[in-house]
Image 1 (cartoon, rainbow, N blue to C red):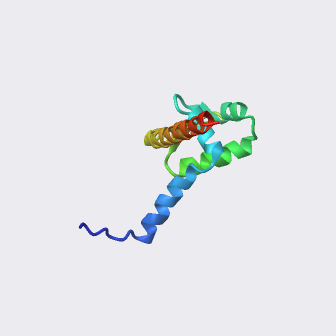
Image 2 (cartoon, rainbow, N blue to C red):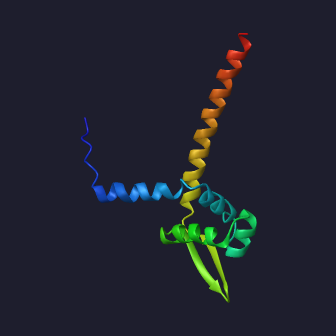
Length: 115
């Protein structure tokens, strides 16, 4: 049997931090809004109906992690997704959740039919 080597604590910490980026609903909303094109902060504020400070805070976290890139034009900051792999990860999670929900629905239908 193949022996699994222990992961260095630094690696575990970095992986945990990367996954924690996706644990915030606002970040997922922002990623969804940025999926097809870059947007300025003000567009994201209007689309999320939250404060500029809140949007900027989450954008900064994702930018620092390398998920987003940023450019300035005049007084506007524009963000776009730099790491497209993030969508593959999100799609895999969504597919898994959908499969689970479909199974739960089948189980409820079976229970309901026994009444």
